[in-house]
Length: 103
Image 1 (cartoon, rainbow, N blue to C red):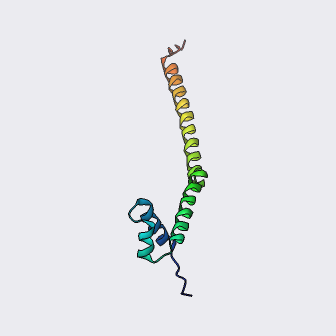
Image 2 (cartoon, helix red, strand yellow; image 1 turned 45 degrees about the vertical axis):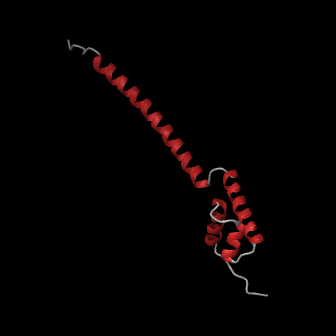
Image 3 (spheres, rainbow, N blue to C red; image 1 turned 60 degrees about the vertical axis):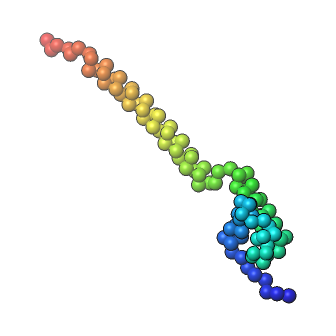
């Protein structure tokens, strides 16, 4: 029995993408890289399953936290905008009042 070769995840992804893009058929990749067809099919299935999981799980936690932070900041900006408008109206009202004469 021959020595079992190890492939890095990067190499597996590169080969699988060549197959998925149609740059090479499974048979061509199998001959070129001297990898069994069934192993290439297995890698392809694992790759596609991983992609499905990425979409199924929704947003990664970091993106979700960022979106929540943006929503909170937008809420604060809206609140401050309202306060500024109220302050402007109050300032305009106060400055438009006639001065009381001192008698």
